[in-house]
Length: 289
Image 1 (spheres, helix red, strand yellow):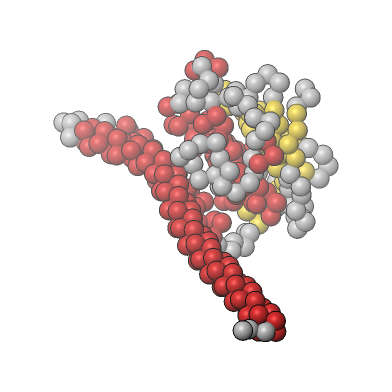
Image 2: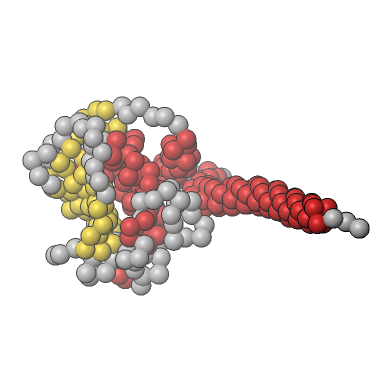
């Protein structure tokens, strides 16, 4: 017969074996859970990369296809004109000028895609902001005509030249104007108006305002407007406004959006009359007038 000590020892041994078995099962389950988590993370990362690549491809296709299609149409028209017995050389020159504009437009977009991925040292020069706006509006005029958008500008005369990187500031204006044109996609054609204004904001800053007559800013989305990869369009990358913010901040200015009581949105930014290095905070607020 087993003594009480033997019985106690056997029970204790069984309990220890059971505990070890439970611990072993738990360790195995944890290991398997970690393996599954690693696999899920790998799968999700892969899917995210594919989604990002797809979004980049869609964005590039959208922005580059338009100027390429316009270039092709202009070249074909020029060929027809040149094949006439008496070619209209003036019309051909106009078409070549349009081809150059569309080529520059595609190049600017490709450069803007590279901007977040490279370190860029600003090349400051004294820039006439009114002159720069006139250039940008001239660039987007063919697109505005295609979209049936009327373009207007109210530029304060005699503004001081501002220290700025001309190409970078041009990119900010192009992004804001392109967004304004797209915002009016569902607006009745007779109501599609784009207005660009400049003014001396105070003794230290020049202010640029881009107004559209689109659907306006959704209050729930307003705080994220300038976030990287935030977009309300399924075929957009969501980098335009975040790049605009980064460029304005590098110039020492600030950029913000406002809701227009009459409908549409107002995007505006300031650039100081003297160079600053400190960034300025974003603001999203309601228009009071």
